[in-house]
Structures are given as structure tokens and as C-alpha cells.
Length: 221
Image (cartoon, rainbow, N blue to C red; front, side, top):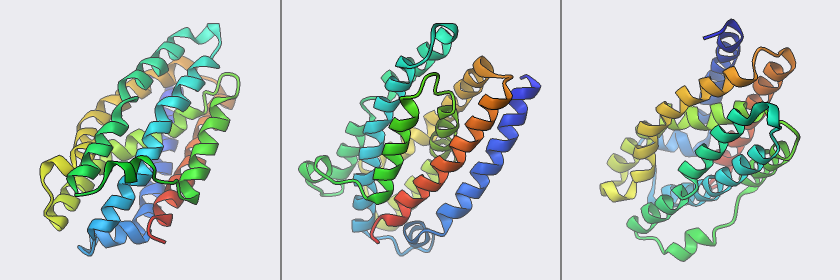
């Protein structure tokens, strides 16, 4: 791993630690950590997550389409990543139904203000030429999956006495997003060293973290 990649990873680790602290202060995660989580909380969480996950493959595809010929390997990597995850929102729908919810409710669910802001930010960034900053957004989202998803899945299952079929998305991503982090390091190496790109990646991670936390903060607010 090059010094440039290592330096960006250190800065991103600081951003993620701050992000975790911000999440822990949201009403939803406080309820989960204190054992006061209710079924309605989980269903509201799944509705917002479904919209975000569905958008994820779309903004990655758009970002890939705006990467130039000098970075074809990165374009290919983003396209593969988008293909891998483009059906994951269906798993969220199945989890929702397993909680007793109606699939039409999650499919027709509206984004809260945080989800709207996060989605708009992602598509705005993905529409720029060579949107390398979005690697910072991927660090936040994939990192959340690899570090927190399984923990949250186990807590939700235990608190609400749900079957395994109702928490598959969280448990699945807890296992698979760790592999995505390794892919992320490879993608970083494709655009570094470049001081301006490095700064943009870290800044995009910071903004994504704030908007993601807002999305969680607004659930049930």
C-alpha cells in the first residue's frame, strides 16, 4: 500500500470514528442500544434504507459513466460493484415483509429529509467529470455495513424476537462489506497520489457522514 493511500485511509478512519459517535446520538440508535427499540422503529429504518440502497447502484453507475478513458479500471470496478448490489433492495423488502409489513408500504415509502439530502448529494457528485470524491462516500457506507450492520442485526433480532428472515440484509452486509473495503483500497490506488483528489475524497466522506446521520436522525422524528 502506497504512502498516499495509507494517508487517506488514516484520515478516513478519523471521519468514520466521528460518524459512529454521531450515529450513537441519534434517537433511533439510542433506542436500539438501550433495548427500547420497537417494531415500528425497525420498519421505518427498513423503509429509508431500501430507498438509499436502491439509489446506491444508480449513482455508482452514473459515476462510472463519467469516468474518463485514463481510468478505465476504476470505471470497471464501479460498474461491477453496482451490478453486485443493484438487487439488494429486494432483500430489504423481504425483510420488511418478514416483520409483518406489506411490501407495497416499503416500495411506496417516501424518503425523509435526510434521505432526500443524501440522495441528492450522491447524484450531484456522481454527475461530475471523474467523480473520484465518491470513493469517500463509499468508505462511509461500506464501512457502516462492515462494522455496524451485524451488530445492529443481532440487536434488532434479539430485542424484537424476530426470525432470521427479518434481518437478512443487515447480517449479510456485515459479512460481505468487509470484502468491499479491500476492493475500496484497490480503487484508491487507482487515483492516488493526487493531493486534490485526496482532499476531495476526505471531504466527500465528511459530507456523506453528516447526511447519513441526518437520515437516521429523522427516522421517527
